[in-house]
Image 1 (cartoon, rainbow, N blue to C red):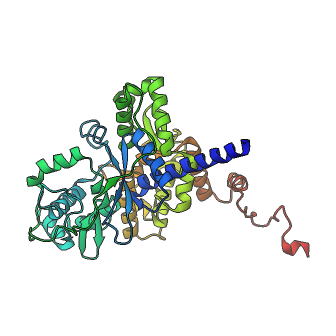
Image 2: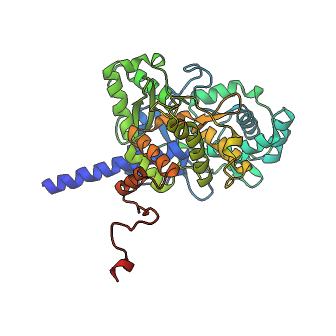
Image 3: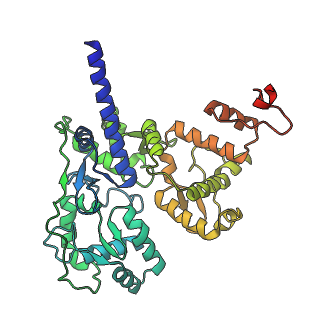
Amino acid sequence: MASEQGAVGGADKERAFQAALLLGRLRAAGVTSAETSGPVAAAAATAAARIGRRVIRVHGVDRSADVLVLGWDGETAPAAGNLAPGWRIGLSPVPSLVWAACLRAAWPRPERAPFLGRPFRRADVVALCSQLGADREAVKQAVERTLPEAGLIAVDGGELRLGAAVAALPAVVVEGLRRGHHLLPAPRTDVQADEGPASVAPPYEVPSDADPADEMSDGYGMRSAIATLETARRPVPRGELPVLADPAMRAAVEQALLPCGRQLLQTGDGNWVTGFCDPLADALVAEGVGTLAAVDRAVLALVLLHTVAIPRAQGRHRHSRWTGEAHTVTLAELASNRRISKAAMRTALRRLRAAGMVAETTTGRYLPGPALDRMSEARSNLLWEDLILVGRPDGQLAAAIRRRRGLDVPAPPGELPDEPTETDRR
């Protein structure tokens, strides 16, 4: 009997972890395959509902399979005005303009649902936004990378469609878009064009396996606080979230976030932020979900070396946080590393800025970005150790780090390793 209960408990824990991993994929990648077991999807939907989110199954974007996306419910959907301008995660001006043009091209009739919409041409959107004064290369970047990565459009050669993220927009958001439909920039296309195959099933919300209703009288306040934290570009000042000063509310937020693989963190100066739990972050890294490309990692390492490691070695950086002191570096200084071209470095910096890993001052200087504040203390320590391995790989501290991590430790020149090699045994 005890063994049966242990097996059931182990299965429940595994399902809970897989549900959190599914939600982690959705947060990191925006869209993920719908090929997952029903119990896992239901558990993910239940966990998401407790923090005011919905798991939506979408048809028609990917021709080979359905996908899942993560949306907000109508009650706690983040609203403009909760945070100061620039504090909320969102599109920059050029991608916002491009997205407005894409939405208008795919959605000529506001009385209908915007998703799936009709296909539209890339060239029409690029031409329109360029005529409106946007930089042509920035427009192409938005069409080819920024909007597809956000799930707002899907690209198929020269043809575009609305992406799966549009299917997850709450009804209140869609209604607001309808009221402002006449303000959207309209490309010169035939408004009578086909608006998508009628046979495509509409998106639907994945049902949860339990009643997600929160028994707390202030459940709305808890979900609103989570929505603010989850969509903030940088740590939220304590004064913006006074509800977290209440230990009971803080515990409720932590308990609601945990099944989603998220945790509440407080920075050294007392501000609030959310981040992935370490086991879930490890699993996502193992899958390669939400990770940086090799060139982006190299450029980020260079930024941290110039803005944190070198100033720290010189006694000018005394803060434990990555963003604690504003030491900056220019593109010209970064480009002194000849192994990465300046063009590749500029592109990598643009991606790192979009991910929040790097920030840029108004004078064109770079410094660590606010996303680094989302790391737990353990993961932050690992990054500090990585900088030691990069900055002084032959030092004694680097050797100790390698030994503790179980990595091969190269022997200093002229010294024999502790353990005899195959040649030594002969």
